[in-house]
Structures are given as structure tokens and as C-alpha cells.
Length: 490
Image (cartoon, rainbow, N blue to C red):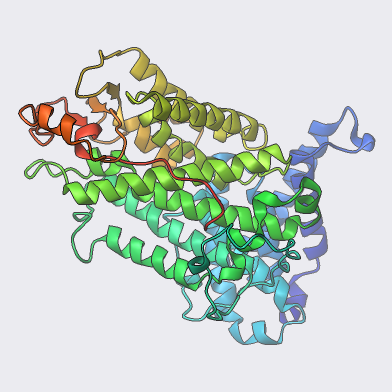
């Protein structure tokens, strides 16, 4: 910023060194550094850290300082990265407050906007519970987005139902803005999961609950996303690999927006949350209709997460965002739950999805080592279930697992980000408990009166719950669900 030039003589060097450290840490190095890669990384890391930390500690809200901190976050070790993000957030808040009038007259307002929202993205990716009011403007401004790629040739009249289209014109803020918006909702959802974990969440279906507030936010987001940005109009799955790569500045935020949107909805409606974590021991399970709705949404939206990312993989269109790794790890617990369904088709699809998720996380961990820890947690879930096999019965197949493993995935604690503390230290009140969840899965209701008459006298009440230390929940008898048809109708 022009008004701070007297404090910025080292700014170009500071940013350059930060970029150099990031480059050396994430990509192949130049031949010039052959055999001395480690020394080069250590040199630039030390120099950049010292310069940036010194200026940041003085509370100097320069754009270049915030930019350099953003770069250093990506290469810091886990614990230090978390502390750097904290410094970054406060410094950006100070920069916004102290220079609000200057932002309008800045020689590079686009750089200011991109820096501001990069801080927000880093917060939501690595520490979504720690939000500040710096981003809560009534009418926020967003950075410019890449243009929508040219349309494909018209499709047949029967490819999509006519009522999927809307003639109403909606303001298009650009794909980057919609990705930022859905990340804000994800931040709220992450805080809600933490409330559930510590037992402070309201009954999900009650008016004014955080669950309903999040549903309203998702509905509002969906209503304000223009049709021109939707799958059926951009034809993502009909594009060739070369098209995607050539216009990756548009397609990367588009894919991230879609994955985050579907994953947020799937996690919000996760069966574990509503059948185990949110269960009221005085009143038993939630209402049947509510459970039906949540499980249908969880299955439907989790399937879309896998569809989008599998298509990217098939097209060699790399997605390396660390938040995607976190979302996939959490959403993977949905097929993990249903892989033991009695219905062989449902079980096989769930097994395939889970295997793909593990492969995806393993590949992503080469770029983001902390993702390997999430893969270990998924494998631990499998190990616990396999070491406690349950015999199938007419009421379903039971799964034995430790809820602390699920919470370590969906609501990682700060202690899990530091190398000195194991993930299981200080786990929640379910640490010593074992929960058996039956995952017997059935198809939607069909009109088979003959079978109904034969079985009318042999009804099972799924809400006769054992309130002991072990709990058994039969999904078959609680709800029926469906597999979504994954066509381009979103």
C-alpha cells in the first residue's frame, strides 16, 4: 500500500523468499540446486520466517506482509502453521480496519481483495472454528472470477426436464464468489459439529436449532446461485480433459464449490450424527420422517462428492486442495457405514466408494502429509469393525467402532495438529464406549400386499432401545432410502 512504503523496503525480498520456500517445498527444484535441495529450503525458510515474523510482530498491516504469511502457511509444520494463521487473521483484520478508506483508492484493489479472501480460505481450510468478524460484511466484495467457458452444442430437448430451467435473471457474482460463500457455510457447519461433540447442540429438528439455520443457509445459497453456473449448463462431465486444463482457472473453483456444497450437506445429515451423537437418551431416536430425510440427503450428496472427484481423476484434472482431502475423509464414513448393508448392490457400491476414497487420500497425502493421518483414522475404523465381527440377523448387520475415531475426523482438535500429541489424547466422552450400529439397508417401499399380509403379524419396533453401555440401531427399520441417479440435473 502506498501509505506504508517507508516500512516496506524489504517487501519484494520478503515475498520472493516466501515464494521460493513454497516452490522448493512443493515442486521439483531446478538443476541449480541439485544435491542441495534441503539446504536451499532451509535457507529460504529461515530467511523468510525471520523477515516476515519480525514485521508481523510489529503489527504492520502491509499487504505484502499478509501475502508472505499466506505463502508461509502452506509450508509450515502443522503446529506453526496454525499459529501463523492466527497471526495472519489478526493482521488482516488490522489491515482492513486501518486502511478501509485506502482499499478503494489502492493502485491494485484486485490484489487487496485476493489477499483478503485468501486469508479467509486458509482459515476455513485449516481452522474453520476460529472465525473473526473481519469477513462478515453485509455486502462483501469478491475478487474477479474467470469467465464461464463457451457453451457446448445444444442438447436434445429430452435430455433435461423443461422445468429444471428458469427464465429469471439472477446476478452472477462469478464462480470464485460462490466458492467463498459455500466455504463460509462450511465454517459454520464445522462449528456446529464441535457443538455436537461437546454436547451443547440443540435438538436438530427444533425451531431455531443450528441444524435448521444451516439448512436455511444452504437453501439460500442454492437459491442465489445463478442457473448459468449449474452443472446442467456448464456441462462439466461432458468436457474433454484438454478443455478443463486450458480453463482450469474457472474449473478448479467450480469443482471445489460443488464438492464443498455436497460434502457440507452430506456431513450435516450424517447418520452417525443423528442416530448416535444427537440421540436424546430420555426420548430415544429422532422422528422417523426426520431420519428418512437426513439419510436420503447424506447418501445422495455423498454420492455426488465421489462422482465429481472421480471424473476429475479420470480426466487427469488434478485436485490438490487440502480441504477436499478433509471433506473426503469425513464423507467416506458414510459408505463405510453402509458397506455392510444386507442389500448386495448397496453394499458393493459403498465398498467401491470407500476403496476409492482411501486411494484418493493416499495420493493427496503425497502433497499434504497431514492427510495421511486421516487415512490412518479411516483404516482404524475398519480395523475396529473387523476385529469385532457381528453375525448378520434379520434385523441387520452390526458394526462395532469407537466414536472417538469419527470425531477425530470430523472435528479435529488443535492438539491433533501438533506433532507432540497423539490424536487420541483428550478424546470425547465416548472414548471408552463401543457403539454397535446396524447398517441393514432396504429399498424404498413397494406395493407388495401379499408380502405385507404374510408379515403383518411379525412387526419389529426399531425404537425399543437398549439404554445400556452398548447401543444398537437398525437402519433398515428406521428408514428406507435410495441411490441417486447421478445425471446432470444440478
